[in-house]
Image 1 (cartoon, rainbow, N blue to C red):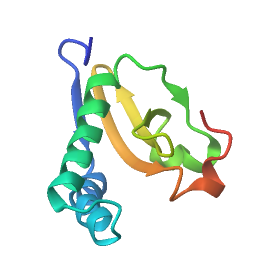
Image 2: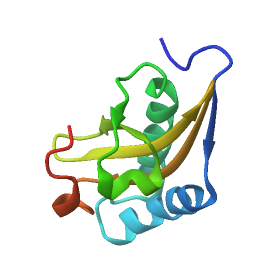
Image 3: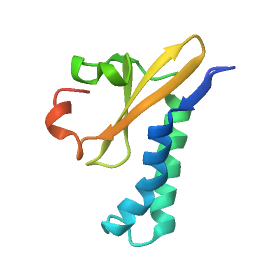
Length: 113
């Protein structure tokens, strides 16, 4: 199971920059003891996004997040962390426009599942 045949996943520039910086941020805030472990965490997150975006249920983005995309999926990476991936789907193209988690945007994403 995974990305539908011919599906293309595109990260907008802001998301790419965010993901590039995320491992360093997690390491410097001491969520991970080694930079390599933090990089592996981010790699696993992007792998899971790409593996499941075409097969997970696409939920409608709430009004506050519509500017980032029409739909979202969630990905649970730990017992305490769920990532929310907002995107636009156009034919077999997924354009990922925003990624956040329950720690960063908790007051805005309460109620999202």
